[in-house]
Image (cartoon, rainbow, N blue to C red; front, side, top):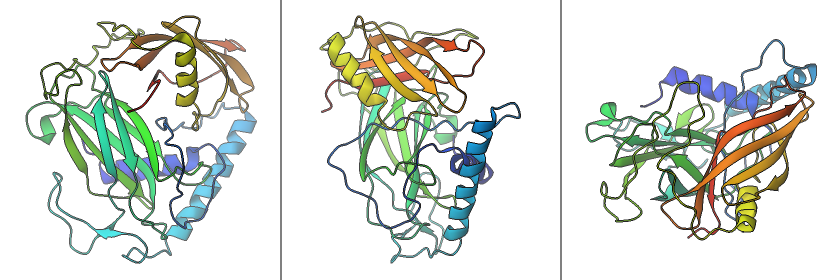
Amino acid sequence: MRRSSAAIALLLAVFLAGCQQAGDPEAGGIPESASVPLLQPHFPYAPERDDPPALRAEFARRQREGLALLRKASHAHADAAGGCVHSRPSVAGPPQAKLWLPRPPKITARLLGRQVEIEVELQGNPTSLVCRPTAFAMVVSSGTGGTSSFNNTGGVAEFALYGPAVRTAPRRFRVLGHIPDGGSPPYHLSVDTEALPGSRSTYVEQVLRCPTTGDTTRGCLDGPVLGAHAITIPSPVLPLRGVSAGALERSLAAALAWDPEMVRIGAIRCPSTTTCSVAVRDPFREAKGTARYRIQGEQVAGCWLGTLTGVERTPAEAELVAPSSLGGCVTWR
């Protein structure tokens, strides 16, 4: 499912208002890094009238920063000197004449089982705000017909890379997505980057291969079937292979090390290889608690998938958000 231009504009506005940690507000190239961090998906929060005053003030500050960056971007040039490239044909259609876009990313992707690992490398060294990627988007679809017939429910994710209040992502990073709910192989991957003020690179696409066979259908898992108003643990539950409780704690800590949404992460405990708890605190809501996860394995040894089973909050009525799903590998390939 492709996003409409109106939906892209809305997503960008919310993204600019809802990013969460201080970062470099200027363009000037994408930084290098010795590590390859695992980024968590960006889930924008829509401010509510009954939000605490500290949270409302924080969102107002971020919105001002976002608008200031958009004004600056309106005076930037989209051209080859700034790091943009001309559009090229994709499954979405032929290129549009004289349209400058951010460069598409270079990716290496593999199915872990129910998750898709993508190692991303941003290309070029853009110096113009309208050529520099601010977000990375991925869509995992299932189906055998044309793009319009694909199912991607649950397989869409967006990752914040750069912008007001965002810790700038390095040139290389890693993300995890999910196969779609109720999906079945073959699975198709489509990714792109997005820059200010909403221009998107051409799509990079490929068919994913099953981790146990290398085939596009044989050996893959079906997507989870979700129940209404219930916590759903994907089944069949796969055993965790090649992972100790200590290694699982370290892997979970690494998965939450890069800009978790709105909360601050505390102690992580895995008393076994099937359950873990994560201490979380939201300074803007003056709330704290513990998020509990059920852990299961993936088809690739050393990789795991965690499903949120509950959050204990103080105060009990506080809104304390924790990721509904987490994943990782104790070692990456």
